[in-house]
Image (cartoon, rainbow, N blue to C red; front, side, top):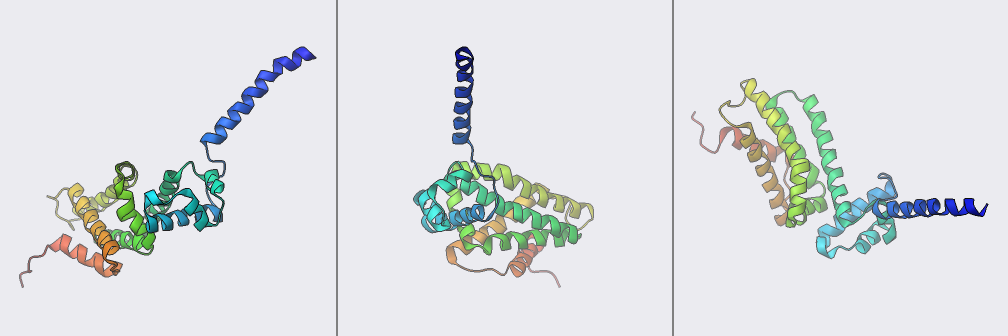
Length: 224
């Protein structure tokens, strides 16, 4: 009996060690639920108010009304909280875009819908706008990750709309759909940045219509 106990002891010790290692390296709680969302919302608000480097986990936890340790049940670090908050916002935006592109079939209407949703998605949440337009851009790492994960998808959607418009004779065929997509994103993005710094609130529909007009017709006076 003693021999058997000794033979099993290393196995039990190894299992316990592996369990501790797993717990330390991975969040224990699954995403979702009220507490999870409160943490994401609190992180966006706290970072927008204080800046990324002056927003410790303790401040985020206090705003979310949870213990500091609770955050680590869901996230490995403050970076992970920030990524999750941005991912959730962006995925919501793409879900809305997908629905609009099914509803609107005209390429011009589709492009305008993307611009309107872009302005609305961020502008309705000023804290998220501040985070997206200022705080996130202070980190080359975050910019690279966001560009690779989200901007590529944004450009692909816009380029697809442009190509359909070119095929239908709505947009000029001699222009690069990639350049048009970058110009489109740049215009909307700059308006959002200006809104953050000046506090101006844009009418998403009217503003997108003007961006569309400039993109399609330029600023030259039209011949009568």
